Image (cartoon, rainbow, N blue to C red; front, side, top):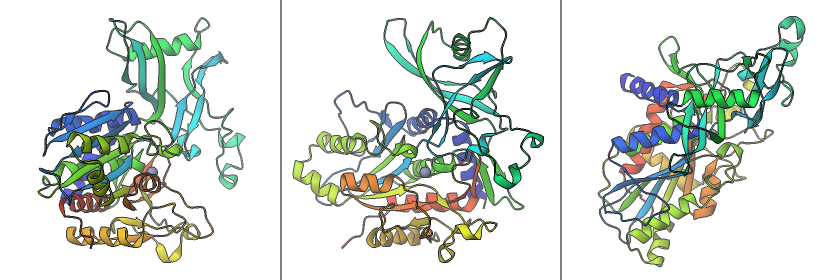
Length: 439
Ligand code: ZN
């Protein structure tokens, strides 16, 4: 349990340092730099050294890291772990709502599919990135974050919403979700006021912010809970827990002595369908893999052979059984907390798992001494999806969709099992470590 708790404490720090997808990529980058990975830019030519470790960032919110083998040959393959850096929630609209009734409120757009009710009465704040002109007249961007809570969505008192416990907590997305930001005074113009507040949070001499993207985050730090410290809770477990597990596996796996290339790909925009210049649907991963082949002088046909031999583990969180709601689950496929990684199956290809990829994942889990569970959604409920089917369709790479069990997916505060995080790290490490064994 001690090493499992260590991994979870590391994960909670990782999430607390990553209040937005842009911050998550920054955090991953810091870990990679510390471990000796070198940055490469898409805008420049690459010179890669066999055995070298590199990473590439696209538009601040997606990142691909890779570790090269000492040599490439007919048996080479990419071993890819995929995850996503974004989480559903609220994003700030460009123009604040004009001050009225003594209050400045910020209008929000709903990003992806959050459980909106869980954002009420929480100590919310802002994190994201701003774009501005530098002193030498170039446009650049940087991260921005308010450390203290600056926003709130106060609930209506029960005396004005008598049926809330029977009907559930519902918010009209346009009129009832704006967040309270300030007690205005008469001369404040909300747009300038927000601009001034943003400028005050950066420790740099910036005269004017040209544009920004701001994510609403929960300032409450992560915790370990349960009578015997079996569980943990934080925001964004879906899917920063998988990013962290993949990163830990990449950093701790031994250098490949075979000709396999270890790849970790963490994408933005999964929660809104992955279709963007940096999402899993984009050219980012195909471009990076192809450029590895080009930089290592791989013949075009050899590259296609290499790709055809490759394998991807798409890691995204899975639904653990909550015994208060038995009717929500497929009774023969209950996923229990702290009982190991989940393989997700769906015949309509909402998940990319097939029998061979599942068999291979089972084998890596067995080698790592990790138990395994199998998930199937209720047949009378619509199933979720993830980046597995998108990337496997794009690259033609054999893929298994897996994830750690968790409760309350897409809540502002999600929870999961301490042992499961370590199980996932061990399974992913075994994947990087052991040679692909397909007849
Ligand atoms: Zn997810």
